Amino acid sequence: MTQKPQQQPQTQFYLVGKVPVEWTEESDGSVTVRAFNPLLGGFVTDARYYGAVQFEDMGRVQRIDRAAFEQAVRELQAAYSVPA
Image 1 (cartoon, rainbow, N blue to C red):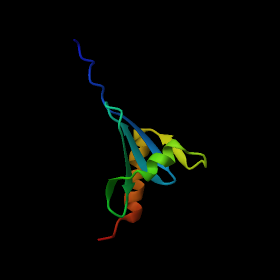
Image 2: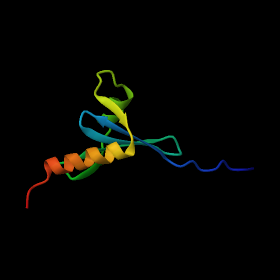
Image 3: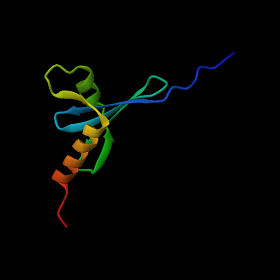
Image 4: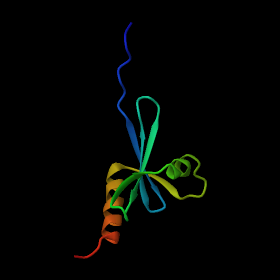
């Protein structure tokens, strides 16, 4: 019996409003949704964004590329950083 080659996780990037969201479909079919939380300074798993992306109907969600995603993270980090 031959095994199917393991698929690599597929990651897509979104902006939900101003929040950068990383959507990763794992090889087993599960989905991990992580949103950038500037108050915590990093990414958090947040199922609310699953529904926001899947059932978008209000024009708040944009699919973006990795570069735009990284730029959106930097902008939020700068906006929420505390001056030294």
